[in-house]
Every structure is written in C-alpha cells, then in structure tokens.
Image 1 (cartoon, one colour):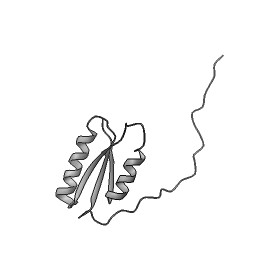
Image 2: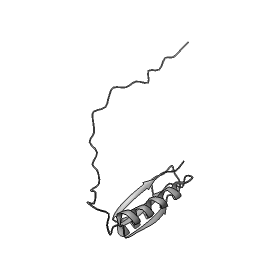
Image 3: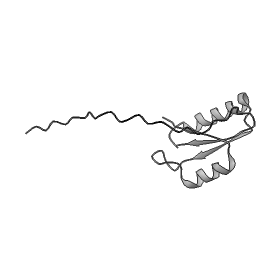
Length: 94
C-alpha cells in the first residue's frame, strides 16, 4: 500500500511584525552584540562592532555569548543588555 502525503497548505493570513523602535543615529550609543557560538560568529560581530565604533560613532560595544546556537539568549543576557545597551545586534556564524 502506498501512502501519498500532500505537503501543501492553505496560505495563512498575513501577519504584521511589530518592529522594535530604531534610533535615528548610532552616535554615542552602547551596542550589545550577541553571538550564537557558531564558527566565526564572534569574529564577524567583532568586526561589525569595530566598524560601528569607527564609522558610526558608537560609544562602546560588548559581546555576549549564547549557551549554544539552538536556543534563544538566556535571561541573564537579556536582562544585562536591557540595563547596559541602547542597541542590540544578533549574529550567526557558519
């Protein structure tokens, strides 16, 4: 007996995305960089942090490491970022 599976589905209704407010400029902002611990994600984000500082005038950047790439950032990181950063960048590697 052959079982035929239909992978198609009805299109879901369009959903709007509530974007976080964006600053009008990065000058003087504190930036949090969250890397997912995959290969090279830390190097990529360090470079982004340096560019943001040199070319966009961010005051400082700090790197945070997730426990692993498969999970969201843990609560301690989120709470620290809420207190110490104005902007957050999440990056992946591979």
